[in-house]
Every structure is written in C-alpha cells, then in structure tokens.
Image 1 (spheres, rainbow over the protein chains, first blue to last red):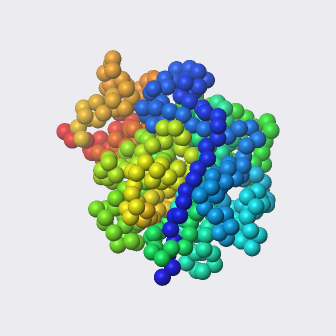
Image 2 (cartoon, each protein chain N blue to C red; image 1 turned 180 degrees about the horizontal axis):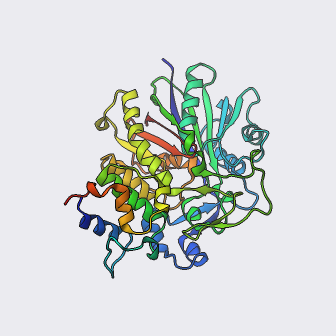
Image 3 (cartoon, rainbow over the protein chains, first blue to last red; image 1 turned 45 degrees about the vertical axis):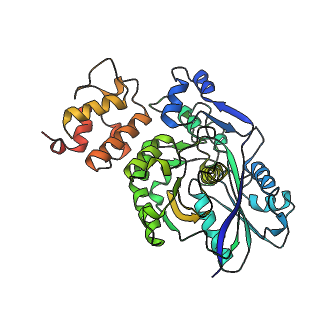
Length: 333
Length: 78
C-alpha cells in the first residue's frame, strides 16, 4: 500500500516584532508580563506593509528547497485566508514565483486553524491515488492585515507566519487516518464580515468599541473569543476520541500531542480536561503568537529540531477554529 | 461545588486580592472582567458542572448571582 509522510518542514516569520511592551505602550493599563502569563505570548511577527501571505509562502518554500529538490514537487496546496486576489488562486502565482514545473497541479484552500490538517489529508489522498508523489503544502497567514489597530485582544493573540511542508510518497504510511468536522452554525463567531461579495468593503465603515475596549469595524476581523472557547471545549474531546478510534489506537500508544496553538489559556484547559500529561503536550507560541494554519507545522518543526519528538514516535495532531472547522490525525515522525 | 468554593474560584479568575466577592457583586464593576476572565468562568463551569453556557448569555448578567442562576441554584452543594 502506498503511504504518505511529512518529508520536511520549514517556516518563515516576518521581520517586524510586536512585543508585549509595544502592546503595553499602545494600550495603557495592560501589563506586559501579565499578557505573557495569561496567553503565553511574548511577541508576534507582523508582515510588512506590502508583504503578503503569498510573499511569505515564497520565502518559506525557498527555505524548504535548500533541503529538498524543488523539481520533485508535483502539486501545490496553498492554505490562506489572506489571498492576494479573489482570483487567480495564489497557488498558481506561487508556482511561477518558485519556478516550479508547469505540469503540476495547484490550488488554494480557504481554511484557518484547521487548514494544516485538511492540507495533509488532501496531500495524502492525492498521493495514495497515484496522482502525485510530492506535494508542497504551504500554510501562510497574515491575520494582522485583517485586524483593526485598536483591537487589542486580537493583536495580542495573532501573529503572521508561513510554513512550507513537503508531503511525499513513502513505503510505510506515516500519516494515518483522519477525523474531520464542520459546523457552519458558528461562522459568524470568527469572521471578516466585509470585503467579500456579500458585504463589500466599506471605506467609511463605522468604528465599534466592545465592552473590553477593543475597537474594530466590519472591514476587520471579529472573534467572539468566549464562544470559540465554548466550541473548542465541546468539540475537541470528541475529536481526540475519533482520531484514536479511526486509527485503533489508545492514548498510551501516542508519544506526543500537538494541537493548534490557539492560546496558552485554552490549551492548558484542554490538556487538563483531556487528562493529557503535561510532558507530552506542546504549548509554545511565546515568540510567534497564534499564526492560524501555520501553528502546527511550526510546532512540529520546532519539536523535531529540538528532539522533543524523535524518529518513529507517534504524534497526535489536531486543528480547530474558524468555520467552524476541525480535524486531526496521527503522524509517525 | 459549594457556593463559597465557586466564589473563591471566581475571585482567583478575576485576580481580586483586596476585597471579598459576594453573590451581589456586580461583574462589570470589576476591572478584570474581560473576555479572558469570561473564558475562565466558562472553564470553571464546564469543569465543575459539566455545562456549556453560551457566551451571549453572559452579556445579560449583572451580578455573580445571575451567573449562578444560569448554572442553576439547585446545582450547588449545600
């Protein structure tokens, strides 16, 4: 049986750093140590003016090509919610910017925090079907461009980042079965309301201030944090169970767990609720913030580089958020 | 969970050190009542009462007693 495996991961973070001291000076009354303590984030990277998710995708991919042969890439999946254009798909432009072969497939995928999981799932499927052998999966996000400068809450949480993963054919299946989920009922709880074709971008959109003093307009990202938290604590325990069921595994056969790095507070609670031991549960978004679809590959790369996960170990991964959309699987390193 | 335990957990979530919370304390009067604190309250209720309360419901609450009513007064141990 043909299997698929993660062959290599590289990531790129933009240069500009927004640290907690910057946030403290922009929003008096907020203490930088306290922010780090609560949400687990010390600094996040912010894409430069004019630097788009596609530009970051190029940079992450070029880093990857220092390690893998770019001529082997025969499919591109680009996951972003910050595309350069409505059309064409950024993935097509990425093919050209990277000077990849033209006899390959490419498309964009519009998903957020679950995007990496869905990307892996599609990559694995098209490899197993015999369509392709090496998929370049890029997850690149610039939520900072969707966030109002006065929206303290979201500016604290989100950072920009891009990850490039090579998913390739392998003799041993190293990407196991997936459990997936969708519930569009929650669509309005994490949304950029304007700018699409339903509600056009409004140059004079009204500024609104919520009860936490965060300012935004409907042209900007809106997140109902507590409701997203509710979604997570209801959904993830079932997701974890389904991932294990699908793969006929139990938790003691899992060496490590990497969830989407949403924020430390949420992850701490999920870990406790799921009774996962601290030493096998990854929480680290200190220097990146929540980079949406890039958090899982960034975490996996760091875990592999630092020897936190070792060759042969089984890692349970799960992504969840905007949509609502969620999914997970087990990978063998 | 007893009412007193609930109040003391809330005190910790809101990071109140210098005053006591009572059932009549008005939530919005407290500096620390933000969305992070709200997540703390949601977690507290999920963990101890196995209940998920919609975030919107919290918008209508005024006092701590109102939160306890959302959970159900009969759910607290005597």
